[in-house]
Image (cartoon, rainbow, N blue to C red; front, side):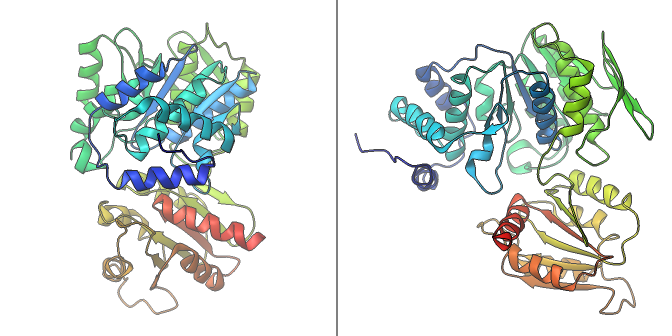
Length: 432
C-alpha cells in the first residue's frame, strides 16, 4: 500500500488531485459502503441542517446554545474561509491537524477501491472524528441539496430545512418544488422534521407525510414574535419569552433561531436547556461572513450572499443600516449563478463596484460582470457617483475600495465564499 500523507496540507492536496479524476456522481452507494466499513455510528442525538440559506447560522446558534448548557458539541460546517479545520469543531474548538489526519487515515484504511470525491471523503472523515470524540450531540450541516448529499448516509434524530430557494439548479432542479423534494430527503420516518421556510414547498410537506416523519412547520407548530427589544418563541409544548436577539445580524435570523429552538424543544428530554443558557447562547453566537459587520470606520460588511434569495436579504439588511454617503461593493461570483437576479436587489444600494475574478475555473469574468453592471448605471450619473472597476483577485479589489472609501462610506464584500475568503486573507496578512 502506498504511504499516506502525514500532515494535513499534504492530505488535502492529495484529495484535491484525486478529486480532479472523480466527477460528482449523485448517489450515496459508495459513501454508504465506506461508512459501513468504518462502522460509523453516533451514540448521541444528531441534528442535521439543510437549506438554501440560513443553515450555517442555524448550526452556529444550536452549537452556541448547547455549549452554554455545558454539553460537549460536535459540529460539521462548511465551506471554510481560511483553514480547512474550520469545518470540524469539537466543543467549540477547531479540530487539530493531528485529529483530522487520523480521521483521514481511518477513511483511507477502509476505502479499498471505492472512489470518493473530495467532499465525500472529507465528510466521512469529519463525521468519523465527531463520532469518536465523546460528544453529547452532533450537528451536521448538509452541503448541496439533501437527498444525495454525503451527510445523508446518517439518520438524523431531528432534521431541519431552513429555506428553499433557487440555487444549484444543475443538480437540484429549477423550481422550488423540485429543490424542496431534494432537501426533504434528509427527513426520516418516525423522526422530527422541521421547516422554517415561511412558505414551504408542497413537495417537502408531501414527502414528510408520505414517509411518516413528524413535520413541524413555522406558523403551525412553532412561531416567533418580537418587538424592538426582545422576542419570544412558541412551540408545541414550550414557550420561551424575553429572548435577546441573536448576535448574528440580519432580517432572517429569527427564522433560523426559531428552527434551532424547535429542535431543542424536540430534544428537551435528552438535552434540557435552561432559559438563561438559551439567552446567552443566542447573544454570543458568532459566524463569519454572514452579514458580518466589522468594527471601525468606514463601515465594512462581509456576506456570502451568492443566490437571489440571499442577495435580497443582504439588500434589505443594508437598507436598514442608516445613511452612508457612498457604498463600495467588492463582488465576485461563480458563472453558473443567476448573476442578474443577485445584482438586481443590490443595485439600488451600491454606488461603486469593484468586481473581481476568483481562484476557480467556475469564476465569472470581471469583464462579464462589468458589462452587466454598466447597464444599470443611473441616467446622468457622474464618475463620482457611479463606477465599475475590474480586478484580478479579491485582495486587489478590496484594497482599491479601502483606498477610495471615506469614513462615512460603506464597503460591502459579497458573492462567493471565495470573495469573502480572499478579503479575509488579505485583512489577516495586513495585520501581521
